[in-house]
Length: 509
Image 1 (tube, rainbow, N blue to C red):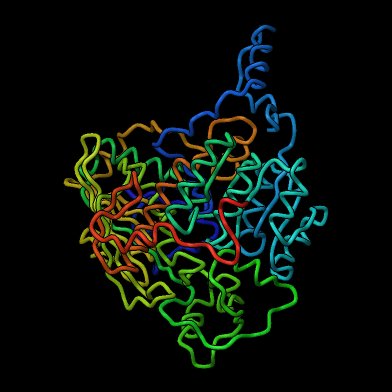
Image 2 (image 1 turned 45 degrees about the vertical axis):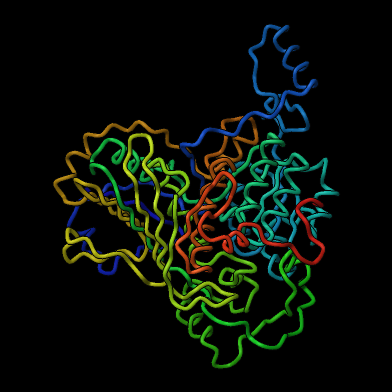
């Protein structure tokens, strides 16, 4: 069985199209990897019942009206469904610009915009001229306290936690781009703050409530593949420079950019706009021009991803997308160990290519699972059942005792072909949902929690961060999730919570 689904923001990676000619394809809607997810973890716990909320509910009951959630009624400063949801965007150039457009389509009113770079944010400023503008997110939250309902965070990874936490403490609904945080400790802080705020949260990750994702889970959980003991996941990232030392020197900071605000809690370093002539990063950029035209800065924009102080490398950039469906389908939680091998790991940047291996324990009657991540052009062994069909540039391969499933942007393929009939007989039982932006919008209005609410997003993000710590230490690490500690190599715990610099603190936002 081969199910085809379109991917609006990524071209098909099939090299010759032969697989599409040889097999009948069933078109399926698939959203780009900036869309929502819905997990097997329980929804966030309700916030404590305040006296005001209790009295409001009691009044409704006495009037003979069914009890509804307090945020549906607009209690405690939250928006009722009858009122539009006013949204502030922080980090509105690049991916932020595109995702804010999706927010608007979902129903949000774009009320305010914030970016440290006026030039990079110009597209957003031009599209929403009525939106109030800010450079510092703290100024935005002070000035807009009574004017906005929700905050979208589209900044580099190292500032996610600060901005999202500041919004949560002001009881604003929050959506943050993946990965949710740069460190494991930051994620735990955000999860606790979300519980206390009682607001709607969301992280942008490829959905596991789309038709292909749900079908994957239904097939696996119905036993079409037998017991699944291995999963292999690969990505064509990085498409930005990695595996290099910091270039010497500095360049003038553009007048449109507040470099200190961009650095935020990261260690001080001079601004660098241009790579030295002949630097191998230029070769990497040239090879990726189709993806990142114009994004040639050393750190900003876009290329922060490869620097440990600012980003989380290829694994952090794409892991949450790819692991999302795997976690739902296999009912995974925290791994017991993680190990990595890679090209040379330098102190400041992620490697050019890596393989990261996670071992998950048995759970709910299911066997232990090994999940292996590949990036930088590396891929798992090719399934013999593919014949002469090309391997996709990005994909997931589930290995079961009785069959295999290959998932990619080009579709779902049960292997061997004889598995198709068994797959056809599996009923569709899982709920399909509309994706990141509509889910979050409905949650802001009192609907069910968005798919990638922070109770789901935090452990998902932790998985990619654990892999990065294994890369940086070069050790096989044994992980105890509850106390956030590695039990066999104490030095690795220094990466679980890293210091903030330049006067920034999570306690002070």
